[in-house]
Image (tube, rainbow, N blue to C red; front, side):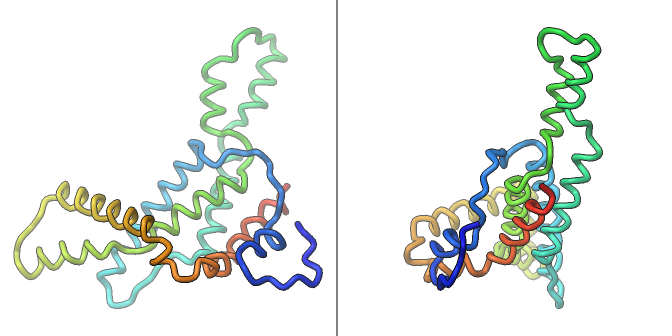
Length: 204
């Protein structure tokens, strides 16, 4: 961590320079474990958000709860599945020679090692991205409820994907106009960033 001293934190660059840890472990963010856990949390959060979109009282997963749940599940994954490096070392001590067996490679694919900060961050980012309900589903619901015009699931799913891709693409092109104050993103997510770093720095 950089020494904050008497530095006044104003911009996102100040946050990156003085508050965010400079530690870099060269670990990967995308692997089977992170994709699987991200898919589980994305599906759960998206379903919960969509269900409560049609209820009088809304509800959603708290960011802090997501961070802690992902942390415990990621570490439970490490404990449940065998460590490929230990299995390989035992295989070699028992006389294993030549190319590493495919079953050990499969174990390494399934459990690449300790649960790392980048994996944790990518899962949390994916989960929070699924926490906003798609307004287009209200149109399909109204169409079926009030106008008796049912649509099949394929039409609805493909429509939502195309609407989402077009909307995010348009926002990407219009980012200088749409995002009024990008520095607010740093301040809004700083507690989550510090929580992620604290969990993984404490466990190392």
